[in-house]
Length: 282
Ligand code: NI
Image (tube, rainbow, N blue to C red):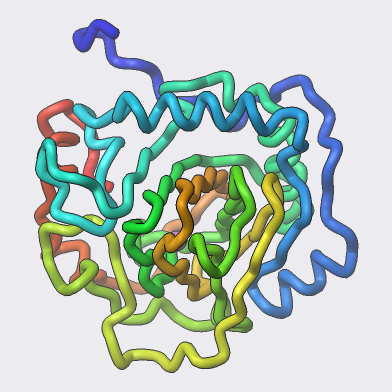
């Protein structure tokens, strides 16, 4: 790719032309609103899974997006050449727009409308590829802690494993009902400002009511922007691949001031690469 011709941002709202073929039941929708998360046994049809997985593995093998800050180590200090403990790609659809033409994405859009109402749009994607036997845990956090503190969000994340998701390889865990909390105090993982990933400040919350959600390949967990979630390290012999699509109703400006000190302290190599490429701080 010629670095002087940057790729356009992906248009997550553009219809793919495919009709959805998976959706939530009324019981699943009610469960989501009560508990702040829900599971689906299938959102990515199995006949499409090998193609999505090929695209996914290629993006990680090439460290696609790294020079723009869109490939990073979520849980490490992320120096070039250092093994990554939790490799992540932001906006994979920017580099592989074919992802947006999949049945999986048609289903993500459908589920977003079911949970957030008419007009809800897909608004982003990312991917976390947890290495075998060495992958770091994704510590407890609320996704909203990463976002703009001066906006109010109605946003969901749809987390899709490309192989089984088990307690052994790092399936998602949720605290039921935590979507009703405010955003808790967070810090960079290990309180190291060089690390991109965030965690709830140790001791700030009791996670003993957490629920583990094992899934078949192509299933999904769906959670709200404030739902507390965690995924353990990967103790299996294979990568734990997860593609995450996001859906939202357009965020609105907040009436009251809110500050996230954890965003101010963070100084990451990812941000340096993004700044050099003319990007934005994530
Ligand atoms: Ni998260």
